[in-house]
Image (cartoon, rainbow, N blue to C red):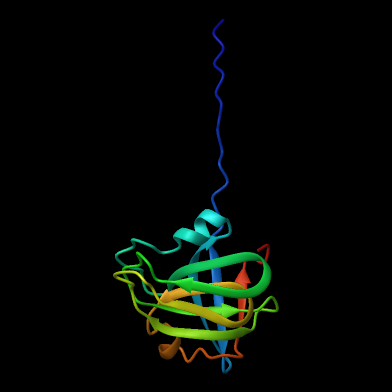
Length: 142
């Protein structure tokens, strides 16, 4: 008698994370990579030669405080959206340019932020995203 044992390995697919910007009764969805660890915070979108439309990076911090970002080794211009713990946009830096040599400009949150979203430059203007608008993060587990 021959017995075959088959092991099936199932890996749960990663759930895609989305940020939904809600502005003036309209909404726009962005697929994001999540940076929720110190190494990911430091690297961010460095060395990327492009970013697809309606894609970006969501920085998730364990607490709400003043945040500071720079564009060292970042090759594409970005909009940075600083968001409070209650998911309200507190500050937007539009068209942050790549830093080609030190010293690099520092961009601050101008208030306490727990989240930062980086998207292609021009995204906020195109979609009328402004300070005081809100966001949703899906899945909500973040």
